[in-house]
Length: 120
Length: 109
Image (cartoon, rainbow over all chains, first blue to last red):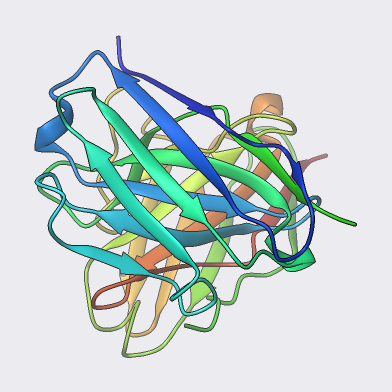
């Protein structure tokens, strides 16, 4: 069974940093692109970042470029998102999602999300 | 990276069909056959319903179908059921990034 479990969401002050993790199981992790998608309270889904299977190509939304960094550890079946220079607008549930194999689709499987709250 | 445009709401009675539109540009929806649709119930993670414009993942009922014309993609839900009441989001590949729509709240009357 495919499972994605996010962790690391906390309350952090503006300007702060934190690292989110996504633990994957039930599939060959290194074969799949992986994505982060966020959802502010009461708002819609917003794509944040993706990383390819080997971990050597990445992409970011303009709103997080230069502040967030995506990475993966295929030996540990884990993906990370390093968040820095956080603002209140980064407050959201952060979901990790598996890319659709062989297609440019986001999220044939999703985790339950982890809440990041940016507030003083 | 502007969000795709979806109507904020849609509705239909049980058994009826409803179509939700998703309008982008030639840089996203119109430029690639990589439009996906997601269903999200309150407090739950999104669920993939359609990918590559009109392909259904295993387990998704064939009551859900997708199409695209130019810069606008559409999701049609036929034979509406109570459990179809949810938020629906479209998303499109946009070259190196992805963009989501603002979401449509589907109400089953």
